[in-house]
Amino acid sequence: MKKIHLLFALLLSGICWAQQDTIKAKIPFEGQDQSWQNGSDRRTVPPVLTSKYFVGSIMIDANYTHSFNNPNDNTVVGSTSLARNNEIQISSANIGGEFNYEGARGKIMMQFGTRSTIIPRNDYSVYRGQYQLDNVYRYLSEAYAGYHFNKWYGINVDAGMFMSYLGLNSYYQVENWEYQASFTSDNTPWFFNGVRVQIFPTKKLKIEGWLVNGWQSYGKFNSMPGIGGNLTYCPSEAVKLLTNDYFGTDAAGLKNRVRFHSDNSLLVRYFNHPKSKGISKAAFSSTADIGFERGDGVAGFNGNDATPSQYFLSGMCYNRVWFNQDKMAWTIGGGFMTNPGRYLVLYPTGDASPLPNPNNPTQTQGTHPFSANPGDEFKGWDCSTGFDFMPNQSITFRAEFVHRESSVPYFAGSGGVTSPSGYTTTPLPPDWKPDLVKMENRIVFAVLFRI
Image (cartoon, rainbow, N blue to C red):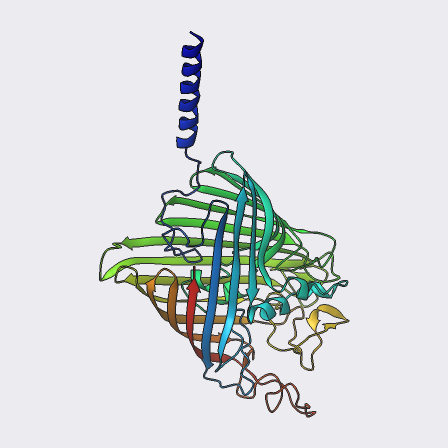
């Protein structure tokens, strides 16, 4: 009888373990093909570098771009994706991956190439205190540690440096429909340093909260941290809605100047025949942003001569059509930006290693700094069209034409922004100044690799 009881217990135990093994973890957005979405991983098969505890990733972004303004120093200004004209450049070379073990999770992505200089160049929080944060972090695009809780469809708590996705586009060009981002994406954050909590209460909804150092800043400008969050809702695989919202104090030494920003996007796939050798997919994305700064001399939307308006209004819209079973695609779109006070405009000029202006630590102290004073006007608009050839899910060959305009001289003209000769070693004559113009046309050729 004891043997029968033991056999029954072993059989029951085996059934329980078998049932446990067959219980699938609840995965958010499972069953939805989101590879078509702007700013998302376009791969539909598991990554090559995958094991039980680690998913690896290697990305390389090589490009050649030509500005029809032909600046003599080959410098691209007003862009976070491009750095040099008329030269083959490595904008980004990333290597790293995601680790997980019994709920513990971590991710590290290294970055090399021109982006490791371009992105830190736009963060002036590093001039507060010591330890050269722009050098400490410049070779990291993402690095965080956290824990996954098996509640609902998952809860993740992470601390470190993570992507922001304000402006819809991904930081990694291989995930985007276009190469040169519209003003909306290029002038909003690519990353945050801090803590985030991701909650997936249902299969189709993500709720995310942030407590961060500031607006794409390695450190803090003042004592208050930035707070914000994201809501993403995908009622079906053909529709995605999201909003990102942020509040903080990001003007150095101006602790009473607060910033609010709201970023909102809609993506719709309105045609889907993936096996077609003609048109296989068609989709559009639309993004609208609104924000302002208020306090310490600026008045948001209700400014006057004494306290000028300081706000941000922008939008962008793109349409993409895929052909030949998604091996080719054509994208067209563009956007606009209005930003009086220029508090989010990428500075086009400044020394190669800019020092802060002692009277305004958020501005460079180059020989000819680009002003960002309360009331300074800035309006810009852009359009682009591009063609992608994607023979497989690891490689994209992209050709793109971009037109951009601004209300004030902003883009590099034929005289460049460095010196009369274009070299940093050339002494500057007293009457020299950067050659900035209001319009730019350029072509971009890029090879984007990912495994």
